[in-house]
Length: 419
Image 1 (tube, helix red, strand yellow):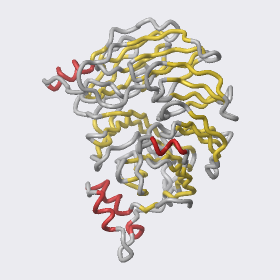
Image 2 (cartoon, helix red, strand yellow):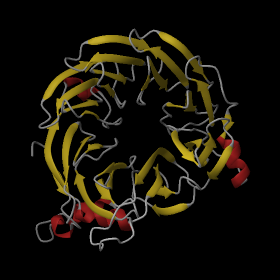
Image 3 (cartoon, one colour):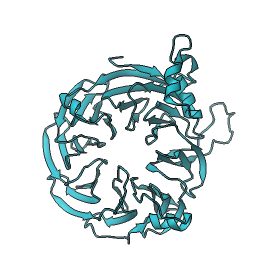
Image 4 (tube, one colour):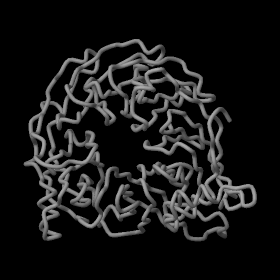
């Protein structure tokens, strides 16, 4: 393990379950009662910790958002940084292969395209970039005039992106020339930080906006295919009060109910909804599930039990819609009905989007560290606590995960399934 301090979060696991404060974690980290005594398992271990220390870090914000991206075949990790750079690193040991510097902090989840061996990413300087993944050479740069922090999407010959000014943009994948764009006037009044990225499905581009609406556009022409659906009005009807924050900050998620396409989306104060993919009609709504910033679908196919006798019935398949909230915790909903499966209120600082890995969920928290959780009931399997905290979600493949701490150190994490 390289420079920096890493604490095992045995007591932090208790904080996740019972709401203890960060101070209690620090107070319990002593030689008489070492934290590792209380670990529920040894499923998480740190393979490396590599600081990314460009000089420009000294002038920028003390947190890291976005999320790393993986090139699995090439064994590379791509991650943006508040030091204004996009890094390409070797997955085995975090050796820096190249760094591309922009004019603003890079808090965007990159998109790696293995067909062209290129990386698309956005920056707070307002631009969307396409660079060669081999050496970081710039291929094109498109100025959107507002922060680009959500992951872009490729479909066919087009790359789609959304910026912080409620603008959806479609660009020629080869040249970076604009094919179409759509802009919605931002809402008047208070807004929370963050915004939704694009979903491309069924020849539509779905997007949520800060005025509380969700809209679908034709993927080829940009023509509006829905009347904008006002989720704040839906929440007002259900709760009897106008939401304070109208923002739809979750990137929509595609799903099918009885072979009909639906779009799953969340409004910050308005709750989580399933909308008909063709016309935007409401399928179900959960206005109580507030503060949501990320939605993730998790599924597990039917499978035999490990200790089952021959011919015994299979364990049933599972599907969950996981909703991560900075105010109400982590929710698991039935994606067909919106009904609760489980709900975990989390400690201070909020929670990242949950990332499926090895049949479990990997979740980072701002104050209390990194956790491995059961998707079936939300119980904690293991945890790691750092001295820096996390503002970004991890990325995982197989039994390996990667995440950047708020002080700019890339952690390589190994997950060992407990026997």
